[in-house]
Length: 66
Image (cartoon, rainbow, N blue to C red):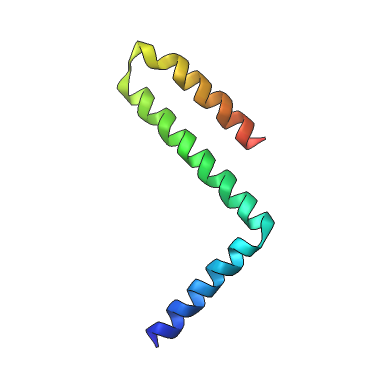
């Protein structure tokens, strides 16, 4: 029974990646999450030399959201 369920999930994943709109959505979501994570990490360091990098990451994040 578990094998059948796993197969159904795997097939659904393949179907997701065959749909260009879903691929675009997932790509955008992963990129947005990665940029937000990196920004939060650099902010947690509280280093002066990271401010420019944070600014660039936020700029790219705004581009990804639009």
